[in-house]
Length: 273
Image (cartoon, rainbow, N blue to C red; front, top):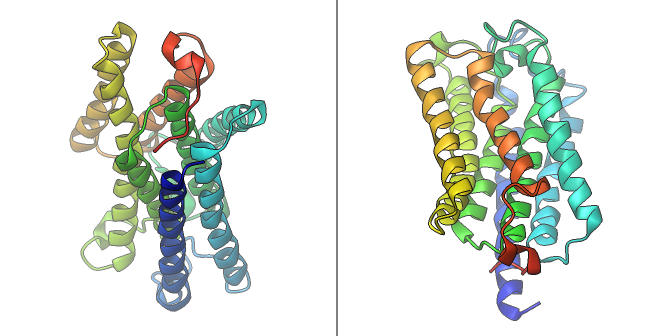
């Protein structure tokens, strides 16, 4: 590993240490005051709160290991298997969770008001599975983009805000910090986790690979369709899940099938810069 790679690796690690420290301070000194409405917010009981804070901080620090492993490590079959299992499990879990209630009426966050632990697991499994597989996709095709890695990291960190403050209703958006926090975290997660994938697709489309051009158009069309549906129909669990399902399908096809393989990318698996 070159000295340059080591510096970048330390930079990403410091970034996640900062994210974790800010999150820990927020959870310990600010989040505890969020009690509106006390019995209907999806907030954990006091006895479980310290356990969740400590556990979620550990999970955030896990991203440091995942980043260093999938960016700079010599990837083997075990890494591929973990990426595949996390991808399948993440997709199955968010789909299963979405049907706890009518998905045409309730969003993941609304379900989280009644099932806070399940919503927190949603916010753990979904980002990790997408993040790991995005980096794996970068490595598989020898693609390097610092902006993509940073953007994905910011998106995953933002989800830890969202899952701690399930939305308590649109009417609170102007009067409650919790709704502002929830919506901001959710939007940052969505855009910042989609950005690294779009960056990769645009890069591959520039190679004039027809398959990647088609994949880029379809994926971007799904994202636009979701925005149009949110603006015209309103939000529900199905509309909310469309880009997630599209992302899981895209990552599976690109990472674990030969449909989009490029000969040049099959020869080596360089560490990213």
